[in-house]
Image (cartoon, rainbow, N blue to C red; front, side):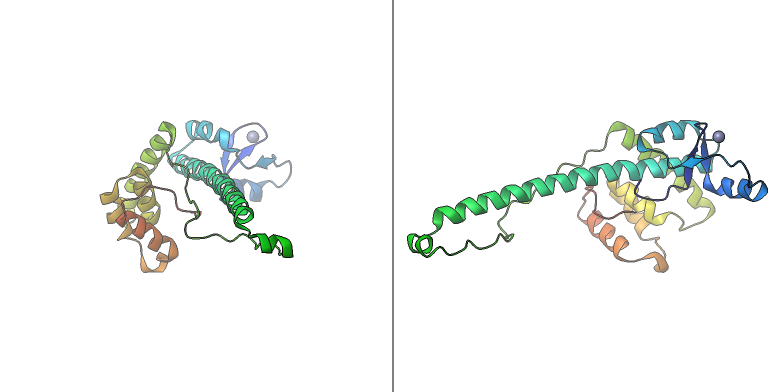
Length: 205
Ligand SMILES: [Zn+2]
């Protein structure tokens, strides 16, 4: 799990909010059930079993991050494979163009360095129907929470709307981000909203 979800799974299979657990731990510190992080493949189940709105929001946040984390792993593997290919092309080009006298003198081939012309592609970011449904429901829920507390979740909402391609809504939210929360993350999100880009950014939030 990339981030702290605030949720755990109990030995018995039920899902628990850490917030609720603290109260129990204070009451009776013997025979506490064993709790573990909820694995990604159970997060949809956790959403369905949510006992209240608060828990559902946490579970939907966790599922959103989990799904994005999976894409970042694919991205990393894709980039590494392409770089290996770039290096192979470069190495064989070095050998082919190595002049007779260099070979004779047995000069070492120079080490590989990325050039501006090296291939740089990224795997497509195509959220599944389940991911889109989750992002849509999560953003609706955060938006109604925001009505009670203006500016709350503005950064999350900006990023959710951006990934969903709702750039107008993303723009409205990013302009609500309080000064104290503005930083590199909000700058990059702003830049991607302006570019009308839905691709995942390589940071965790
Ligand atoms: Zn239990």
